[in-house]
Every structure is written in C-alpha cells, then in structure tokens.
Length: 359
Ligand code: BGC
Image (cartoon, rainbow, N blue to C red; front, side, top):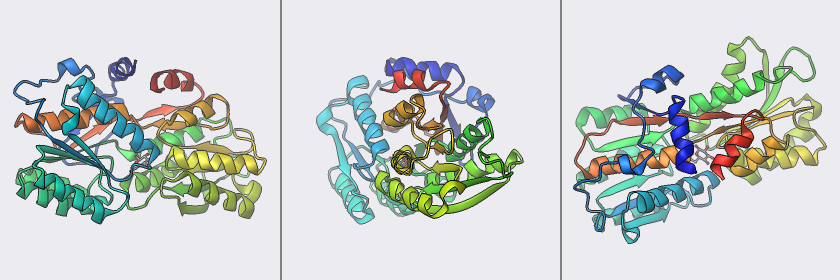
C-alpha cells in the first residue's frame, strides 16, 4: 500500500530533485524533470553490495520526536525488508537531543568500522566537524532531515567528500501552509478587519525547517497582497506539550484577535488544538490551524473539521532515498550533494485519501 502510494505521487510529478548544491525551486515542472527515487526496491541495483555483512550506523537526533519515529521505522523497514540488509548490522542510536552524546555515537560507529552512516544531526551546525571526522575515517555520510548550510554541501562537492543530504525544501511546506489559509473563504481574515492576525509556533530555530516554514507561510500571504499582523512568535521546539502551552497563553492574552495559528509541525499543532478547544474556540469558524508532517492524528483531525490543513512531509520517500544514497556510496558511485523530496498539501479535499495511504 505504502509503495503504491509513492508510485502514485511520483506519477504526478513529485519525485526527488537532485541539486548541485544550490537552493531548489519546487515547481511541479522542475520536479517532473528530476531524478525520481526508485519506489520499487527491485529497481535498486544492489549488485556487488554485501547485504549480509555491510554495517550501517544510523543516529536519530531524538527518538522521542513523533515525525522522526515514523521516518526511522520506515528507514529500518526499507533497508531490511525491501533491500535485504542484515538487521543485526543496522545499528540505530538515539542522539537524545544532545550533540556531544551523538558525536560519541558517531565515533563509536568509526571504531566499529561501519561502512556508511545515515545521520540526523542534533545540530546541523555540527556538520562540518562530523563530516571531517567521517571523511578522515573513509566513511561516507548521508545526512537526513536537518540540512547543513549550503556552504557545507558546496564544500563536499568541491572537495569530493563523500557526504550528501536528503530532505525536503521547507520553503515549500511553509508556502503550502500559507496557501491553505488563502484557500479559506475569507483568506484567514475571519473578523473582516482587513488583516490576518496570527500566532506562529516555531520548531527548534536552529533547524532550517523551522526558519523557512516560519518565513514562507507568512510570505505566501503577503505575496498574495494580504496584510498580516504577527501577535506572537514563540519557539515550541517541535514539541506537543510546548505547543499547547504557547497557544493556551496566547489565547488568554490575545483572545478573539487570533485568527490563524501556524505551527511548524503537527505535534505542536495537536497541542495547539487542545488549547484551542479548551478555550472554546471552533476551528474553521472562528480560528484556523495548520501544521506540517501529516501525522495520522492531524490528518484525522482535518477530516473531522478540527484542523484546517497540514503538509505531508513524505518520510517514506525521504527514508527510501536516504537508503538508496547509502547504497550508491557502498557501490562506489557518485552522489549529488543535495537531494530533495516534494511535500504534498493536505486539506479537507484530500485528507481521507492521504490518511488511507499513510496509516
Ligand atoms: C518535522 C518535525 C520534526 C523535525 C525534526 C521536521 O521536518 O516536520 O516534525 O520534529 O523535522 O528535525
């Protein structure tokens, strides 16, 4: 079912945009020209790869993260079930949101002589240091989810370093969130005062996903000529409980002035929803709420009319592409420095269909 879903997405020009170090443009036309990930594992060329003995070191920034749990599960499933790597050689570590702890894990991977690493850094700013350690040890790295600076990926390419990034362009998800508000009957201006008054619940601001979603969700509104008023911007670190607290406090402070709640991810949006309901507000009538990720609970809430929209952060394609880039390294092939998967807008129009396919 899941693989069928991905094949469907690719057919409608989703695909992976392989880029030479520069920022991506995410128009469907560009995606159509881009190299698509092989959604069918049989299409991945594993010739010459020692599936039984290859060691893969994986470190996830924090196991407690809802989205990264889905991602991690798919990554391990795909590597073992679809590609056939030996499960006992796939070592998955919890970075516990602590860069020093994660750097230790990476040093242990080097001592263990893993053949390739797949890393979701706690701090993307650590990429230059980690890349150098791995490069000196001769171990290729596939970074996922938290994109290192462009200067860093440019360096990999210029110096022939075996490091690459697989992710999704967060500008696209931010833009989609803004568009979802523009698609409502009053374009987000519920009280008709000529401006959209919003709260922004931000992820960890060290993470480019948080920076871009914050900027581009609002930019979509202003680009469409809509006036905006930011009532509050606060970091919720991708966390549901923090999202709830921030929105609870904001609703107490700003009351009916709040027309839109933007959350950089669904975990925080689910927290926001608890606060919104506790305050007696009604989604899509007197307040709008959008997130990112398409967690099952969020998509169900869209169907039930309790969330305005979300954006599918395609962890299936991202996990599979990351695994495929690791295989390319194992085969001694060249890998582009940056590989992007498209996001998909999720609203009441397609939520049931999306839910069927992700659950
Ligand atoms: C996801 C968040 C997640 C974060 C972790 C983002 O792309 O949308 O849900 O917490 O990645 O880095």
